[in-house]
Length: 194
Image (cartoon, rainbow, N blue to C red; front, side, top):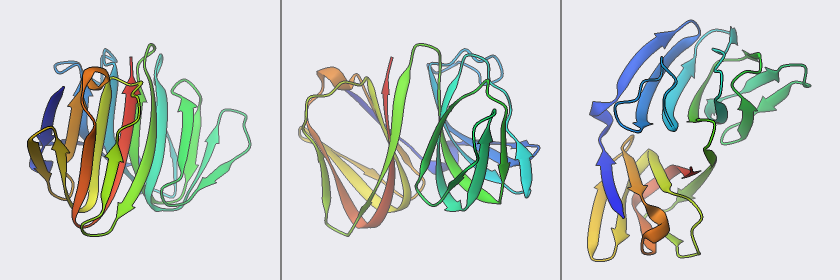
């Protein structure tokens, strides 16, 4: 199992027509969002206009978790869906997607052969989240949205502050691990298989 903690000050932020996007991680390293040659991409985005249209993404599926605000989404001809904090919408990048509302969201973008899901956990100081079930994914990513935590794997401990990203790769062959809250924290976790 390969573990890395990516600090918040290493992220790249860009502007889009409706706000800003901060790329947290793109895999494989060296792939480019503009070329769409990634297997998966994790990012955080703000929507700062009352109405916006998402960028179409051929060959990409998306999971969007709302972090702040309230957002109504229209995917193609489907009925609108309003997301509240920590709710997730999953949709194809080719669907014409429009939104109404100002918000902040966490994005998981997946290439054609990848699958993934997003969950969140709120932990009180000292509490633990334990992953000890049989694993069926290649990558586990944990974004420390608020607070601070640490990951225990075998005999190693990795510390993460607010807005840091913890990545565990080759998880299928890995050992069970534990995330412990150093202070009250909110975690956004992505499980990715490819």
